[in-house]
Image (cartoon, rainbow, N blue to C red):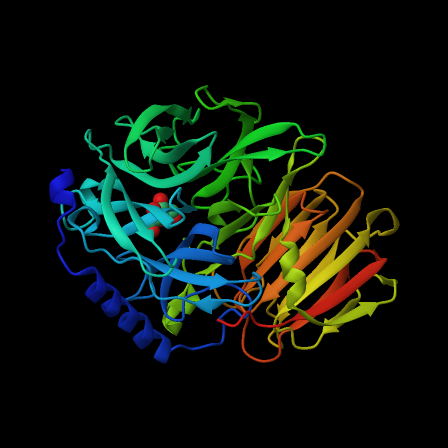
Length: 504
Ligand code: FRU
């Protein structure tokens, strides 16, 4: 397979030029009503997973799965942006297009690292339909590599891990270096459709050896673990844990959890090179909103672990598909272990650099069923807010975002009966509806809420939980209101930041 797989069926540079033209044609017709101001998106076309976030030659790089010829998932390419501060971004040329037989139907997700030679290496999945036409007979997938001196133009090295047994799903390599050796994890589905993560090892990044099955999902309904990520985190005392992140296909809804089409989460455990991974937790969700999938992380030079996710669009209606573009990444998050050994996900510190102007409100109490407008016409805002639950009697209350004159809005609400934070889209005029509800433990409630043209991200109590959902507003001014239902709401702290665009 390898020789055949490495044969070019088209010239890579020409394939890249065609893809650029495809994106430009869609971008020229784009309707900007829901185009994000401070989230990474493609100027035209469809995007999904963030891939290969890394730092190379003093710049941050983020790639993403891109379909340049339409606003639905299709022939996958690698789109690319870069930044020196994670606040202002620059578009880079499309990095990879399908050109080898092994990737005829798509250059799928993967990762980027700086190699021993100082170059940027991309590892990704070459994808073909098993029957050459569609997914009726499944996939045929292998792991491939490409290198770059400048981090912008890539030369393909071809297949590095073959799929000799033709497992039906075999994709999404994540590579890192540890104690002098290179490691790779990727997801696979066994013949009896169980989701597993495989671990490979290499001395030179070119020749890879199977090490072990790192993880087999205990739930027989979970048939594939997409986009695995595997990295260490230390708590304040310096105790190290290993986090195995994956995007589970086939996980069933369980109360408030796993309610999305596919669900991204992690297990925490311990691991040493050459040893088995021993999980110590159950599966936990990265995010409780409607639209979060396929997160990937990178180490920052200052020791932080930074992560991007895809605001997934699995459930119709997806109203921006008629606008020439579809799909955006989340804001970058920094993730850490707290003193209970639990993960905290917070917006990356760099995002404070987006704040353009700030309004701080004096403490106030909303009366029974009272609503106040705190932003007349939202645009791009971050809201920091505290609700004093002990001094509030409201059954339900918080923010109404994207609130328009037709009474459409999305609620970011505290629900006293379930003691949960809700993103509730039952009053949305456009897009998928429904609500999601995240748990939180304490009696105080601190929220950081990021509102962009068509999305809302909520960080609860210093990152105890996170929630990400699309919210497609109606036309006209889009207010942010604060509202109390069936009782009062005590707001000791409220601050609104207007955010500047990221330059894309
Ligand atoms: C996750 C995923 C990956 C795959 C890519 C294809 O959303 O299905 O497993 O590599 O998207 O676009």
